[in-house]
Length: 69
Image: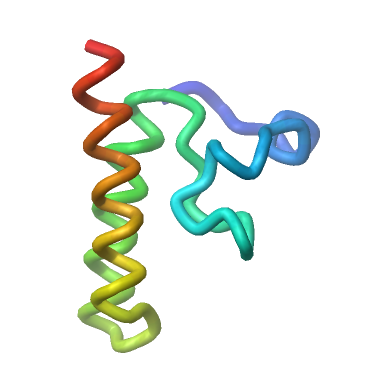
């Protein structure tokens, strides 16, 4: 996975995040999209993320994973 530095993360557009309003779950590439899906699942199980937010993250990640093979 490519390292995502603070500078690079701040330079990403809102559209590169799974939750753009809070700029959480960055997905600049396929490996970050896969990781975002895994982290979202963990957060739902921990009770800190809603199922609807997880669905948004998964939809965004799936589009990136399919597009960038």
